[in-house]
Image 1 (tube, helix red, strand yellow):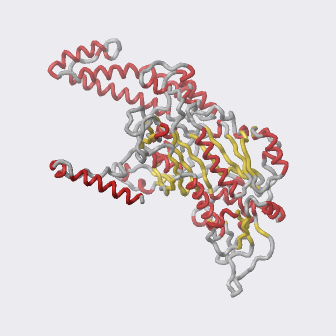
Image 2 (cartoon, rainbow, N blue to C red):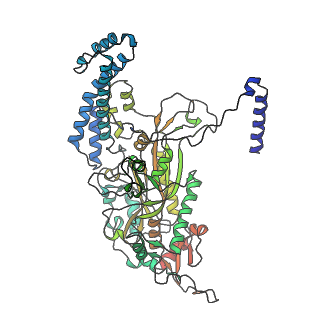
Image 3 (cartoon, rainbow, N blue to C red):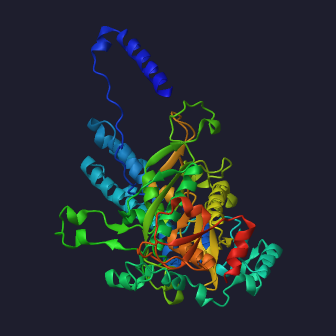
Length: 610
């Protein structure tokens, strides 16, 4: 019906066009607006904060609370020099431009007037009056002005994002427990009792039995479970084949065979389906990205001496001749998360608020409107430099893995204190209260972050995994987040809780660097605002596989070793998996016992096998 209506509308438009004047009918129709218009990242990102002393003090205080390395004396010197010298340079540049823009026939007279006007400053009092000399002077001052501004901007862009007022202070043990789930009752009763009694509380305030780590259970370790899932095609290999991965690529690049490969596929499809049900647009993004894009998103070493977690693509530049086209090709790297290419998809775009949020009526379909919700399955590459110990065994910490990532572009809160915009527009000095607003994240709408957390809990609860939700403290936020939630699953084989997902609110940290902005409505002349960006893990396959294998384990009882016709099965053990994955299961050689989450008998079945 919709296509018929559109056809009738098009026919009516055609009739009106035919009835117009002969001149109009003779003219060629205007071509459709080009799709995929070329976009680029801003060469000079927007400054995250002003040079007002109160704002600079707040920036350093915020960085210290987050244990972020700063070179305070060196950086303060740069910022103070810029604040002291930049206004005078800007004034003189403006006066010289004004003098040169006047009637060329009166250049001498006007240039002298311009120099006299700027005589209040030491540099302009000696400015030459000859037009050629004025131009030379202008070029020199402009270069000096831009270099000073750039040095200040480089320093300001190295500061971390602001911090939400509700974020706990301090290191990881100060993380606040704000929620938990145990759909199958797999947690010990004393752990559940401690959670109910203490929530919300800091992790270090929990009794030892609830905070972990406890004694690992080697029999339930995911590596031991995987070792029993041998396939007839590779009878001497575990379904988690680390030896072949080490031979092929290196340590922590394992192969997943048979049921574990199928489990990874099922988990990704399950997570993508839930994201789509919540209105997320599915995307398949590149796994190779510009290194500059990763840095703008906040993925950079905390300090210059810190080892990089990024794999760089160097072959295209290594053999290039200096000055050649290949030598100037942008540096590329492998994405550590699909968050980065998804941010690139939104870079250098302008969005709009939907009609219900705008005072101007807007025609449907004239967006794009906020919030924008997109998700992608991508391969994540992590160098994991410095990783040691038990975390590097098995699947818990690997260099390459599949992950479903959610990304949201959202507007800021309606009630906003924008001290920086006031300064930029010359509307007066900031007050002590408004000056610290860039580092208090007052305009961050936590509703969007909470919605992402709800989706994450839906995915994890559906899998029947015991989990807890943590509001992470200041020293665990990284560069871009103003607030971050981590979700950890209980992993009995490891004897501890292990992170399986996180969700971060990045306010304008990324959008300022990527030029992601929005207006109140299409066609309006209102101020362009920088949008807020958020990201969240929907499913990180290796960690989920660890949690599922260690909590569900293997079933008991005999398993047929063939189909009755002499054809052997791939495995002679029964793998237990949550029922929600059954529609996405594509592996036929492994006997699977499907556990229904929510049924009372499922808990008894799982507990009785241990």
